[in-house]
Image 1 (cartoon, rainbow over the protein chains, first blue to last red):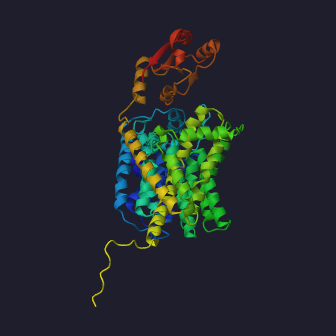
Image 2: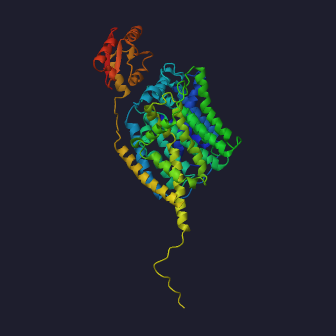
Length: 449
Length: 133
């Protein structure tokens, strides 16, 4: 598993120069490398399946090498740039690294120690699709019963690739592949947050995002939600940096991460599309720099799988959208109950939303208003999932899905809350400075005459 | 404005402490180590009972783990859904010799009804094997 994950990171490494092109710490580059490599290698496998090349061990190796080689060629075109970080003291940030480190250690321990995942979604969908890649050597899923054929392939192809390289469907360490999405998100968030927030706020955003029972639970459970959440977080932050930059500097990363989210879970296409549309609306132009680069990456991840599904008669999502459930108060009540369940979320949602609401007068008059545009609409749009869901109106269905749907958005909401808190601190400090000097207890000593 | 900012920071400080406490409690109760038999151990149990090459069937509910386990080795398996006649027909048609059920068993396997189902599955001359992963 270690060798396979290292190969995925190596495949994605040169693409960090292509998609981001900024100087960064090697740990950050490794983290980006895994997230980028996992998406591109699994997409390359779909490309091989398009050409009727059997998905065998050699194909997986060729995809790893091919992705690396193409990235290397493209990366030679330019040199990495410096990017500015927001200054500030590191002391409190170091203090926040402690709980973040503890959570990361717990996630890594679970991934290594807990053996094969036994969650039903792994057994019935993601893991089984990986097994089909191993047994059938294609992506047709001819033996797959049930409605899971239309699920995008990043996670199941990752599983299948490891099985093929291992020579047998060994899922005793398969949790590691998923846990790496959670572990990689931390350095990536740090690097991206530091471009917009001081150190303590960046560390605070990450601590808020990862100090969550749901985050820890999903980090190695066998489902694709946390992986998609990682890509959505990058999409939001890259779009914000792209808007701040005013040029096309982060457009490629934004489009790539949005596409990768769509390649990870079906919901990713809708969530990422909503974020990319915000960029167009904020810029009020379809000719804004980098827009077509971002859209191209999004299309590269979305369209081929749809075409492949049609060519190979893989079932489309025929269950959702079949009927509408429009009892909005019922949906709101059950989603709220799910998101305020203390054992699942602690106080994450009341806390972050309260901070965002209380600091709204501050961020509304700052560039962070654009971050709010990118972050907050999907909190509403997610509710649409419960209008169109095939088990709409069933309370246990909301309980099962609301936590996962909102986990996709939790890290970016944490960043928005940290941005609001940063402005609140600045406002308090500014008001202190504006106050008149308090009268001193000792009268001034008169000047000697 | 200052009042809102201070309130936001107080909310963040109090909520942050509660959140850290909750996370610490959650991490402290995490279980490390395999909570269930691995797929391979389950497979070993099945293979100890069933000679290779025969056709298996899996039972209706809660048997995804067995189906998942067997899938790489089996290009066909039978879902035992439906009434007695449907199930018997399916078993005969597929020449099913062994029915694998998992434990903890779903309610359908328990009590009198469970025994009846086991008889149905064993009817065409097959054997019911209970695996305890």
